[in-house]
Picture 1: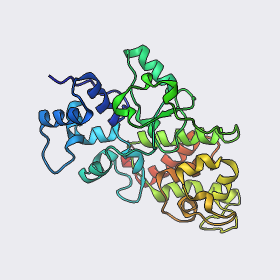
Picture 2: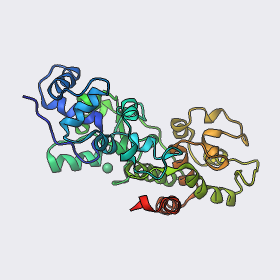
Picture 3: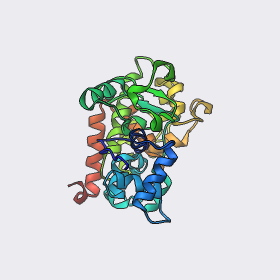
Picture 4: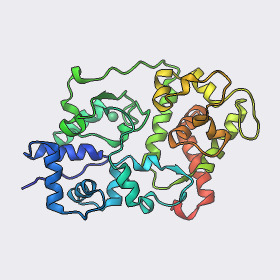
Length: 303
Ligand SMILES: [Zn+2]
């Protein structure tokens, strides 16, 4: 008989698979997932692994994707079906492509979260919010996250990771810490958000602040870009996690993956999150501005 543990708040989908594997006696994690597929027999054609895990968690596919995968952060800011609830537009094709998507090349955990979980339940688990791109900070505890090989999602719990397994993370200077903290808070809020934000609403709340700093915007081109400002105030070791080619740009040269947040209407969610973290002094103020802007366009869906 297979044991199905209750899925926990914000538990990352791969970690949940791992916990089922650890609690049962199948030789490999592949054998575990195959046993789940055999037991629940999800229809062919979809993502049978994802659906078998959703059945184990006793959740429907959309709810499972919404609360346990990184899909909401991937699509938080979009021109497609903006204003709608994520849970209404997490289509089977999106789920099939992205359910086990990682945004970082390692498994991340917060030692304080793991310790709390251990004292609360006698075990720890992998949290989804710690796996977001560029998020090196636990927003609950204000501690730096630790990381180890991604195979740990399936084979271990965070509290079982020994010091020798940890990957060394580069130090960041004191000046950049508040920005990175705001970035983490914004990314986590977008992950939890139920509403898709229109890209132009996100652009509208960062453009006036960029303009006030003398940075180049769609309305007022100048020679200094938001990307120049980012390079000035943040360590390149962190920036390259989000934008691997940013360090190849010259000073006063446009770098569209980041600068398009204020120059055009086509950037990824993490670029807007970084623009907000760089330009606002407080993540709360930035998020309030964002949701107010989105609410003006789609007041019905904010309820
Ligand atoms: Zn924590």
